[in-house]
Image (cartoon, rainbow, N blue to C red):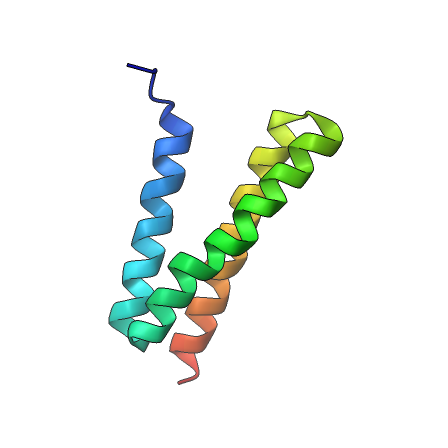
Length: 81
């Protein structure tokens, strides 16, 4: 069995928590947008970053930044809705 990487596992757990929070706070469309929508953004961004630079630290930074921006957008929508 392959080794589990704690950072990748933490990223997945935070992503799940963000999608569930969107579902609970703003409805099923927000939850769907945060799960499937982020998938459509994060995966190509990670692939593009790795294929162009080969830098795993940069890829990790890009991935976490996208998740942080999604969290800030969710927080903003919750505060102003």
